[in-house]
Image 1: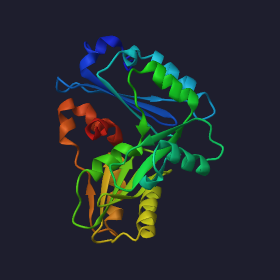
Image 2 (image 1 turned 180 degrees about the vertical axis):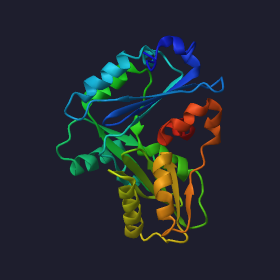
Image 3 (image 1 turned 45 degrees about the vertical axis):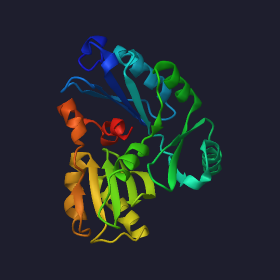
Image 4 (image 1 turned 30 degrees about the horizontal axis):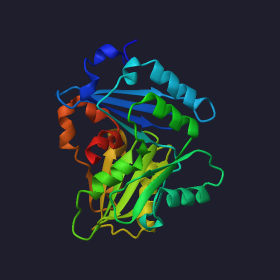
Length: 274
């Protein structure tokens, strides 16, 4: 089968990074050499829906693609569980953040994942089912999963904006949008919105900007991710927002090859944020 990640695709995994993005119904995988150019391999695999053996589906995908079981230089893993939330940095350490998460999700049973934002005022927390966390630790050497919103926040928080203005960054996938809003080195919002059409995404963008009182002319909107979604909503957004711009693809990752352009944006920037 052409799309199978067989071990013969990569001669030496010890000089390669493995990037994993685990969502509710999809696993995205990228593998690239840190030594050789134009080496990136990207695959996406459908997973079972929630309540339909999603963990078993993930296990089957991993075991059916032997290359994933190799020992890599580093393994980066983003987990998109749909329940991520930002909490004040003043909350303290992981234990305090976990208490806040469980108060907001009283029925949750599993492990609490805390992830950095590279901002002064917030960290991210998300819940990971115990079985999933255990599978990842058993299967991937040295894996340290983070919330899928963490690379977006860290990447843009480390890149200064224009003066004292706010920045809103939106990362699009075919059925969901991640939104990050920054004011200098402070995080104002980090959230994921599911949608059925790109116009729904445009509505969420305008609703967030109105709720946070973002300035239509001064506070820029940066768009990343799905080119198709961006192409559809950019002309509409420019009718209401003065500074709507595409995110420039990270030059550090151009050398990995053309496949990097098709890799989810939050996944491709994960190694840069380390």
